[in-house]
Amino acid sequence: MTIDLFVNWKDITDLRDRTFEILDACGAKRAIVMAQPALNKPSLRDKVRSFAIECHQRSLAVSLCTGPAVIEYAAPLEMRDRLAALCTEVRATPMLDAEPVHVGRPNEQRWSPERIAPWLTIPELQITTTRMEAPRIGAHGRVTYAQLEGQASTATLDHALRTFERYTPIERVVPVLGSFDSPDGDKRTIDEVRTDLERCTAQARTCGRLAMFVAQTTSLAEAQLIREWAERAWP
Image (tube, rainbow, N blue to C red; front, side, top):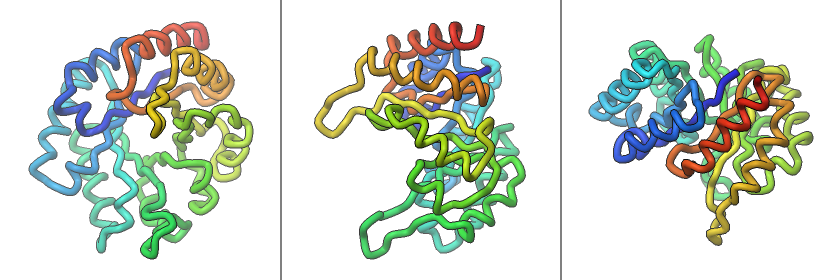
């Protein structure tokens, strides 16, 4: 049973010390790094290497996640290969953030079974996506981090889980909660975080983990609440 914490680029650079404080406070066992900048620019890969080394020293597992913009590239398979190579180098699990790009615009790009197929040649690849995009991706059977970070997302958790289960076994669906601020600044309260955790308890027990997005927006109070919840959920 594990807590996984997503970390963005600022988390592993400017906020690195705080990131490890939050990882420790919530009892996380895995850091999922949003590593797209390092895949775009080789000179930034040392940032990922350094962070991964410190994670392993702290007995933390590591995943590297590439963002949705990969389908904008002329050579997306090159991006796939860069992800796989860097994961091998730093002992990390590869993850694809399969979200649409430029929705509603003339150059809108959505995922499809044909677009996802080349990425599935990485045997250990995991996927994170939304309930809206999952039907476009199609069946794949991979571990799927189900994005539920919206303020009201867990209110319709059963619907979301039914959607994801059509494309991968339910025991491979990991709830992803978060502490995003809404556009009007209505930040999620501790009580709302507690409600989200309670709603996701059964699925977290089913898949053996729960993930949070992202370290930068997770307060120490939230992290401590997550740890307390985990200790009750997984005695």
